[in-house]
Length: 76
Image (cartoon, rainbow, N blue to C red; front, side):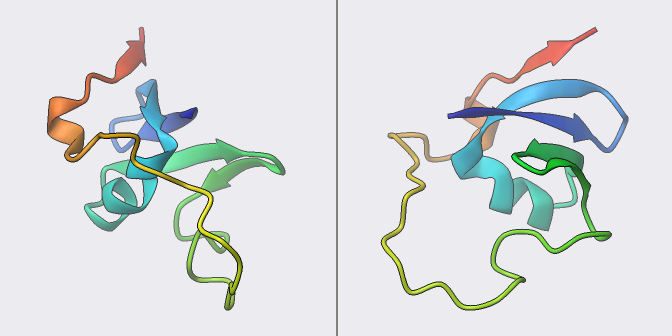
């Protein structure tokens, strides 16, 4: 599923949600939109940092292995 993000250079775009963790860890994402609004990385808890989850994994890569080979749509 695509999600709206703001990259470190403040350009907006869309990425596959399965790539979010990797792109955050590589410091490529400044902000992203989730159900409760815009989240600035480092300001609010993001995936995996808020507690323990014992449920079924709902996110999948859908065949995407590396975000460099995935084309992001960037709004100008």
